[in-house]
Length: 121
Image (cartoon, rainbow, N blue to C red; front, side, top):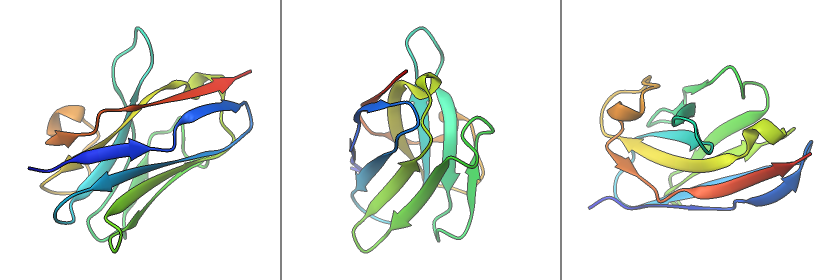
């Protein structure tokens, strides 16, 4: 059974940075990050391919967020810079056992429990 565990969330002021990590068990897969703010649907943040060669980001975070993976440590990281209050949400890492490129939460097979990120103005 695949397990995903997020860490690194918390409270930060606008303009600050946070780094989320997702510890995975098992093999290397396509990994994604999503977020969900109160009263809103789960939103795509970005994804990284199995090799780490390819990444994709939502327009709302492009240029501010970076996804990377360290397969030696079985972790996927989300570096978040220039944070804004509208980035406040519960962030989830997710694993997709097939091809890179999906932005739909329905296409991801396993999910972490989520971690809170709060950006104060």
